[in-house]
Image 1: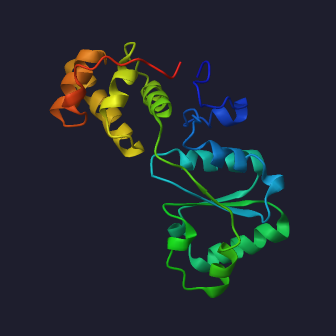
Image 2 (image 1 turned 30 degrees about the horizontal axis):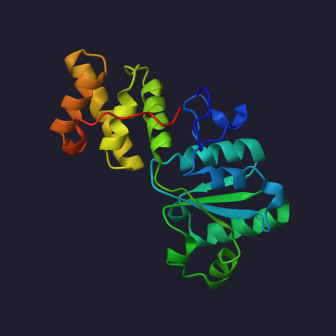
Length: 219
């Protein structure tokens, strides 16, 4: 990943790359607090935490790295398990000392929980959040997703895209998929011209910013 950008955090190797099929974990202001908390399990008041954030934000990768580093259990999607299973997993974590991380789309306060004992336990659980990406994280994530696909971007492409796009993980994945498909279809490298033509034609960038000259403030 090179030198950390302003506002980003350099991580030890075991948290900066996932397994065979994972890309790097890129940490910025959007997810730094959550990652920091998950790396210090010994300080947890209870042996369970909830991590919520947008899909595509790397939360499942964080869960896999957490399980690998701590030996704990991860429930990826609170609605993927029954309330009884989550209740028993919570109890098992307190008894065994092996931490439990529950990944969700929303905080527990917004879950429709029918089991009173589970609801009371979740009220004591630390809740961690991942926000939508800042500019530097969005840029680095675009570059990382292309690297995962074995594709090299021309210099400045990611920095060109970021100020013109909706700042969300969902949009980042849409942009990368659109450019990947256009590059394969046209047999062209992903440069500024292909990027502008493709994303403008699909309504994925704001045309009002097309002539703006952007300074990269992330390096």
